[in-house]
Image (cartoon, rainbow, N blue to C red; front, side, top):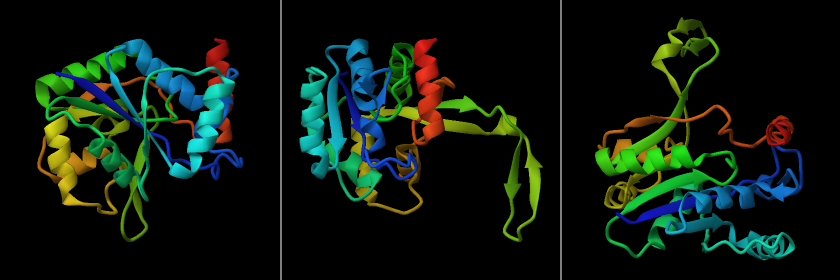
Length: 223
């Protein structure tokens, strides 16, 4: 089946305490978002890449591509009011009736070819593939009355991207419309009644959102 990826990059610099949106910040001398796209291009030159950005950032993005001589093949799509609507716009830009589509955070540049391949393979077999890692730390749940209690961390997973699905399942699920409780695409597919299957991610596949993440990213690249 034909493979697609929708890379969603609609963040701002608020938590990063920077006027420049986090996806455009440089790590190792190259913008985060460019690194992310290059990784998917390395995985396959047949992969159809859809980059979803706020339309107000198009001009700046084009200037970055020129500055860093970035010429990878992709299609630019205007984002929406929420992540849900941005992914929905990405879906609408795909003409194919069948295929597999991965959704990935533009600020996760350290995704690997191995995880991308595993994600598409699992989705081809089972229909869904959601990347995750085990919890390292102990965890507690806070109850409605304000009290808290320990939980077994082995029962929980931290969710990453890519999250990959059969294209027709995605289209059906997104017909539900936006609900505030949708925090990722897996929650949308689950709401529509589809099973969610997990694949193993990697701790280095971080989502760069804070200044501390930038420091870690620079150290990781040097390593």
